[in-house]
Length: 469
Image (cartoon, rainbow, N blue to C red; front, side, top):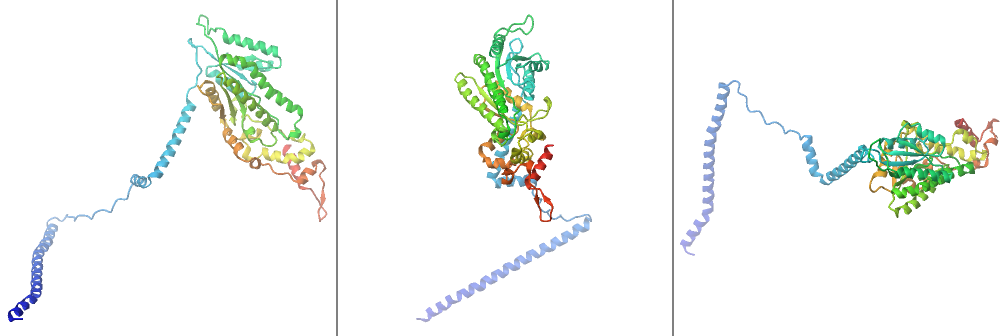
């Protein structure tokens, strides 16, 4: 290698050192330049602030920025909705649907219901009520239908019932003398009633004639039933219940059937629902009678459907009848303590404890007999509206559940096991000692200390006797 090459390599090796030296010098120069510029600016700002305070003593420095304001309820709700869209949609759907149903039910409940009128403004529609005029439900329905513009005929089988209809002192509530026991008399009454419906009517002298229309027939079987064990109910009571409530209802409907077919009127049956749905012990008469009536109603419905005639069954729950002569629920009436004491001794020993336990159970006070008067039932207006709708709407339902407990107890009777229903009503298994002993001949045993002890069955029966008295 020549000397020139060596000299050239030495120069190249010193270049990085020179670059580092020159870059450090440039950085130091730039730093000194910025320091020289910042120092006067800093001094000027300090002097300016001092001069401002000296010139204006009221000078206040700019306050610090306030802390962030907490989020309001509306904003928090909006943020929560955005974070939970699915849950919000479910809540809105539930609340909206519930509110709509409540609004619709209330609107349906309060809307005006009036019967149709003839062209001259006179009453035109006629309703026949086949029920005892002394019953609260018959009396209430006849007054309500008359107020809504119907001409109401109430079936009267005796002179006393006819006087009860006249005692209402309403021109458009009239008796229809129909004694199904006497076929010739009932036939004559039906023919007279048909002539009234067919002949032209004059609302007042000089008014244009108009014809009447039979809107419907309402069958209301007697709703007072004997209660008690099957072995304590005499055959005469069974015969009377079946003859009056079943055969009497069938015979009345049969007498009016031709008139119903001629005018294409509707046929309504009002039956109790709570006891027949549960079929509890000690209510065999009511359960059997209502089951027989429902079988007849189902058969008649199929027959009349071929002619385009609607048959409706209204299953009644609990009602408050305070405005029409006593507060009750239109269910079966329980036997009193005197009736229980009239049972045979063996029947009292076996059934009395469960009978009183069922009657006094808090869980069934709306369903079992006279004990339920402490439970407020549905207002009678609900029954009135349902009857009016069943008579007038275009397509009525076949089965209506009306009154408190009607639908609920129907579902319980269909889906809940019978044993569980009995347990809820307070029915318990009878001990063998109670079945084998008589309360009149209870045996006293001797205790170890020499005193006499009364068996448990006798103690329970003494409690029952005190309760009955």
